Length: 250
Image 1 (spheres, one colour):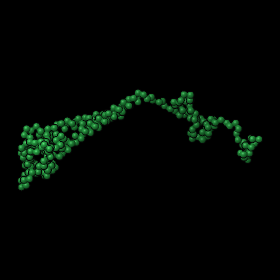
Image 2: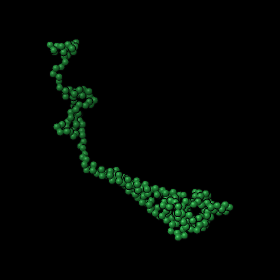
Image 3: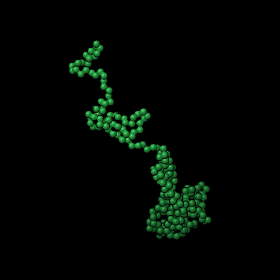
Image 4: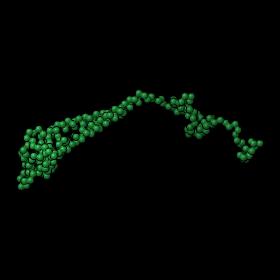
């Protein structure tokens, strides 16, 4: 019962962890954890070499996936090539592929790659964008996995805990505690079991012989339970066994 109760508590703890992780996933973590947001401006990079681009779903100006454009260039650089890489879109061009895994409030449109820590970049877009670094995204993925393992592991552990607790309760109600068994040796070395449960018609004191360290006591105990032979062998020395049998026949 104790083991089942402990497993049940662990299962409940798994559900609590899963619930806290689910609350964080439902929150608008893109707006709360972004490093930069807006339509135009200068962004100074601080973490890693890549940023993920998210666009609000409820933005009335949000273009379809195939029409979205984002210009990202390094400040003061002669290279005008944009560092933004657009994700693939659905066949109709309206939404990005894999939009089912995107946050509830945003679509993931692409990523900015090749960024250098400490450098500034000019960003331009027709719609508000949110930039999320890899560390924030890793935390979100960890929360998602925590929800999955919390639900599966917590549910399984709780079910096992309830089952084991029920088995323990049945055993506690049906099993009877046996009394102590005392083994005593008499003066002749025989074993006397006191308090043992025996079958009907059998004595509780078994009286079986067991050597206790005294060889003579063991022999005497054995002799006390062995009937004497009515026709012992002759003790005369020098009489062969075949001669003795011949004498008996005569």
